[in-house]
Length: 291
Image 1 (cartoon, rainbow, N blue to C red):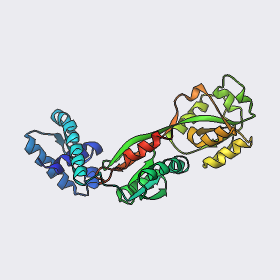
Image 2 (image 1 turned 135 degrees about the horizontal axis):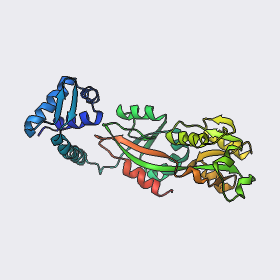
Image 3 (image 1 turned 120 degrees about the vertical axis):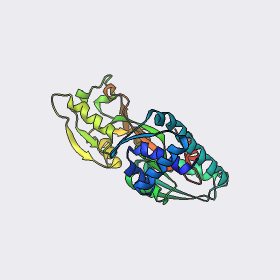
Image 4 (image 1 turned 45 degrees about the horizontal axis):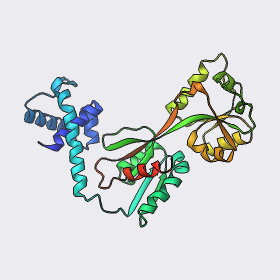
């Protein structure tokens, strides 16, 4: 059975499009169609029902899909084994979002370096979209990003960073037992905006009130937001990890707000599916030592 035919089948389903699958595989649309037809002949069954330009997966196709995905994964593992993954790496190129570069990378790199003393490390800080592009172009080996999907990459959850409300040491909230969104809305807010879905959920919490929140500052930089809160200029919702140092020093105080629920910023670790060296376990092990 041709592995490329199976790959085409999985990609068409992933993108729900022959054209998009062709783009991802760097093939023409007729080439993808030919691979699917070849696979159907091998299996002696139809995998897709076709009506003009529209198509749908058949029941037989649905039954075959998990096996096709497993075949591709097994092939990848076998390829990695032949490339001798046990050899010590000599270079690690990391792509990372700003928050991970500032608050995670400085802690995990010494742990990685301790294990591989001759390892040269290069860090590139950029938005998620740029990191994904660099990974696909093989300019970096791994990336720490927000949520992203692509058939060429493996994406695993790396770290869940809870969003907490932070105030300065002398703020009245420190002594108050129960804090509501109504209470928060009446305080001067330093609103850190990073564009993720979880931050939009915070906006929606305020939307349930009869009056808008008192946002004095819209800030796109975590360090600036923290310093404004520390100076008593307002209170702020921030990722817990970024304020770890200030909390330890007593400069900032985390406040429990039940309405926040389990809001968090998720960082994912991405790598190429066909990578000859998998650094993901190394980074995960390093993270476990610091949290």
